[in-house]
Image (cartoon, rainbow, N blue to C red; front, top):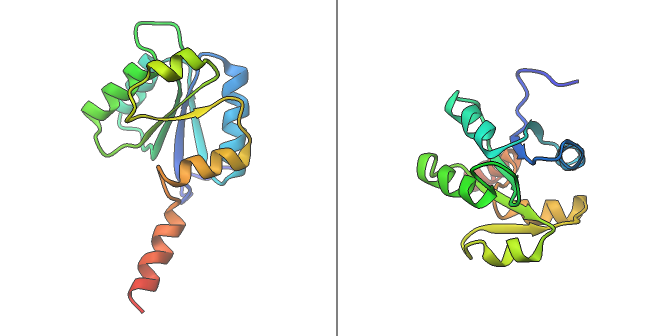
Length: 137
């Protein structure tokens, strides 16, 4: 059961396939994250513009529409420079064409691969809190 006062971080999962997004969301939720799903880069940007509290954006690269995952990353870095974004793809051409400064997790991936991948991007809030506590001792 999700509660409004949850201290868990929220991941915005962006993928044109609801089935793929369901699997990705369940992996994030298994790792302790809340998830919100949007089916396009345009819908994701509208959510962010509305002021949604998002800690990480995790987007597929290849999506129909005017903005793909790389374009979404570019927009987010421009508008929300402190918001981490990670991309995923099962298409090697898409991975090769993405800028080298973007983090890309290749599909298929499992919970452990996802955990390792996101640790360097958006460390869990708990880890940051405990680090601050240890530093003050």
